[in-house]
Image (cartoon, rainbow, N blue to C red):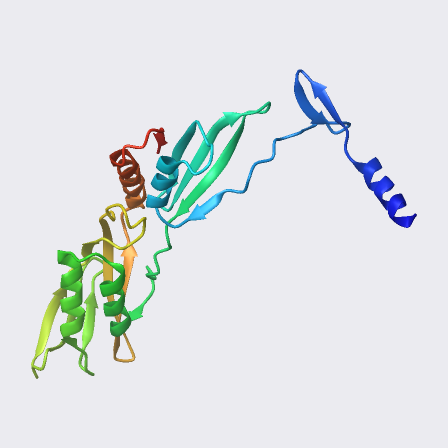
Length: 234
């Protein structure tokens, strides 16, 4: 008896639906009665989106790719239903770059990061050689005029002090977008700092985040090269 009483209360609370201009709304509030769709899928690459579109594992039609940002791509179904709903079918997200831009890193941390988080290039090799070869002692110092830096330190195993100019602006390719596309080249300010006779290195972004737009264009070019039969918007 109690169960039937509860079910009756729930039934009475169910929102009524009404039709206005052939569109369905909930009574009283006139809130649109949107269609229900499955939750979107999530992956961490671009190849999976291409495979999904080509293999068509489900009866999705009228789809398009939206390159939202350097690290996110959405696969949508075109607008449909009484209220022109746009259904999100799949999200592709690239993994976040783990390098700490703007942070002071020890020589060891800096070398490990350069080897593991950046594509091999002339400037990356320069930084590796520079930070690996410098020897800091009590007489070391860094001259900084706000534009360039010069380090006075022992070079290699030499007992003589050497003034070494530091390359201020370097061009590097950190892994910051999907692995299937070319990583954009960006300019960075390289800074060397001494604290308690220990050297620390840092990279500061200085391209106004122009690399993000380049990454978006690279992602669009990737999809176009795959010859998928749906529009790509970037």
